[in-house]
Length: 66
Image (cartoon, rainbow, N blue to C red; front, side, top):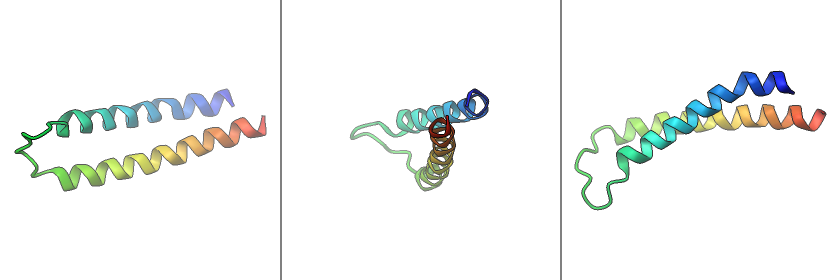
């Protein structure tokens, strides 16, 4: 299990960073004026979260086999 955790941890951490960056960029309450890249950014975030879920599933499966 430690091997799988080591393999996926960095990638999971990257997805966290991406989500935080997205939040920082678009958490502008009522003064968001630059929304030109929102669609692209949402798409990338969605893909990143889907990958993260797959990685977390791999980790949970490894833990259950233990």
